[in-house]
Image (tube, rainbow, N blue to C red; front, side, top):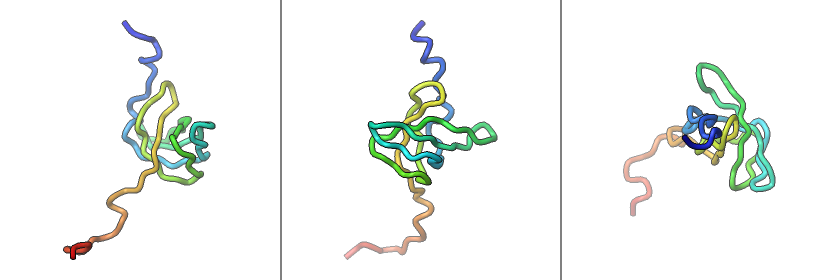
Length: 90
């Protein structure tokens, strides 16, 4: 049957992008992330390997359990601006 905590994981948040409303402190402590999910916005406790400041855009990579997620810093590949053909080639 498994551990009852497995059923409480919020897998719907994994893969979504959000913004830290409270910065994370790496292994020293969690922050909070605001994620648009299920037609609204929800706040989750957010853990990261490295400290991340408030306002950082993050990607939810894992659900630790009810309302608790792991995040990494995220920058959209579509927001880097247009690339020129042949740029970076020599």
